[in-house]
Image (cartoon, rainbow, N blue to C red; front, side):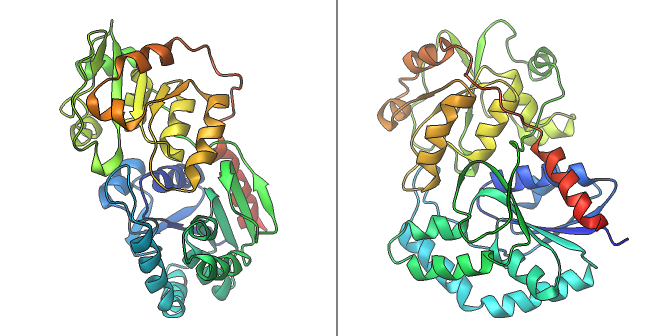
Length: 346
């Protein structure tokens, strides 16, 4: 039986890669996994597995960000349109890639390129994610025609594994809802705190704003909290010692961030509170904000208080909240892997 699964992963942000790689890890050792993505190689190495084969390649253009909290809608549409102007050539190149790697199935989170290449190659094309790019681009000025073209490509999906907090998927016919895919820490929080020289008797706050960081912000003065410094959260050193980012998420009391599927799901899975701020004109934002209170302790901080360092009242209010009303399942990786394995056995 050919059991090679090719994952096409969006290069936009870290969330797509972290969750898709969780599904890929759950397929091991019963399947061979090949990853096609433009995401940073260090992230694929840290979040992946030695048996996962990673091949660099531009799979989509995502959303163009000016910094951690602002995006450029005009440039976003320009790059996406330019990418699609050479789409047919790109599809043929990816069909050759799939054949060279003897792929039996494609899982796309959620580049249309992976769906189109799988369809042309005669392979099962599986979509995985919580939003689709046609839905995102339809929300921007001039995005209607591009969204329509992407929606037509998505219509060739064999089936879809849809995650919670979703938007889009209108053109996909076989949509299967699965639980949250999230990275779970297997470490004791006290062990992690001691290993990273964090106080064990104070509330600890982790600031998580992706590769851009939180530029221009005044460092908050938090007498009742320990703010995790970049030195203490040196990811290179941390991974070298056998610890992972989700271990830190579990070990802290609060993550301060912008809403994104990856960090939300990890806070849910590791029972960590989340203080969030607005993230610009990103269509997924209101969907996430509406859903979050059902699943985890969360509170909003506006940009004025965020950048001026006026965090303490928001943190106090957040940690005074009761447990969320729902305890959602976070075993979506194993659920997805079982569905994919069943398809491989057909």
